[in-house]
Image (cartoon, rainbow, N blue to C red; front, side, top):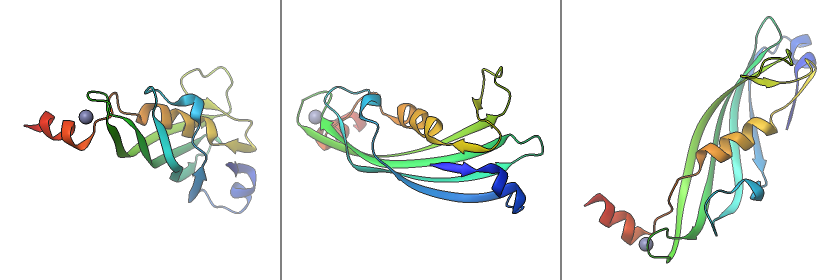
Length: 133
Ligand SMILES: [Zn+2]
């Protein structure tokens, strides 16, 4: 999804919300044999600052399914993850995301959120329970 930053500035909409439904980026799945059941739902807030940098607060949720990491039975879990990103117009800023000051494509940040959101193990109900005991 693209935020039309210059247009939002012209409209004085310096803060706002966005939602998006994203096809799961399959190549960014970490767990072997895991897949996303359905789409990734994205909710977010943006804030445009005076220097044209844009802060994003992104929340993603989706259902992950695959094999239990312990017993290889079918397993699934609902993942919810919040992620903050800052987009700047300075191309030399290696700590943040970069955009051209006009249009901002949020996808790189959402894909990173998707990578960071994934659990290290996926457990079926039985194994998840015995873990808690
Ligand atoms: Zn299991």
